[in-house]
Picture: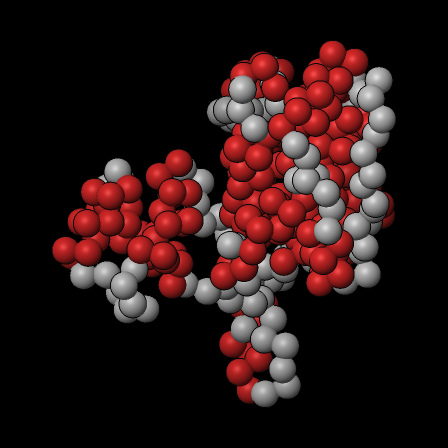
Length: 283
């Protein structure tokens, strides 16, 4: 095994110190790169992987700098790009005759793109392939900060291979802004913040728990109340009030038990009164 190259750990004191440290790391020759990549693929040499990653950290810094216009922290962009670099190193095949830097650019950009799309807006702004292409190219293709005219929309759509309506939709999304739920101020405008009218008064946690407990109590109480009735009274109540679909009529139950409809009504009324008394005592 060849001797390991010297790659000091980059300084993490600040983003500027980190970038300066990364730019001082030695570059690999093509022969050194092939040797390290071969050791990684054939032997799983972790130290070889570390040297490949360290020597290309400056590439991540350079690529991440191109995405500063999205208003996200430079350090976070670099961190995501480093993840892409590590994925590239893991998949790199030196036998294909391609330098690692050329292979890694795709993976670095892919991770940074994914991070930007997840964090640039609270709501997803680009989910399809066409939307992603527009998101990362539209601002740079616009001649000024104004809205695109119909001719410019058609030109952008033709250049990127998307539909004109998709260009218009993405321009609208890029021009929008997130609205905070809470105004965060003491002035009169606070009452009009979304937080003031979004809450559901019936969804308060303690009330939800109380309602759930009440439902369980009523369910167990109903079973207990029914269990206190004699068999005929219980069956009449169940047929009249607790049967899915059409409930039995007084005359149907009268014919079943061989009594008058008035007698069924009396039994039902007495049973219901007893049940209400039991349920009231449980609440």
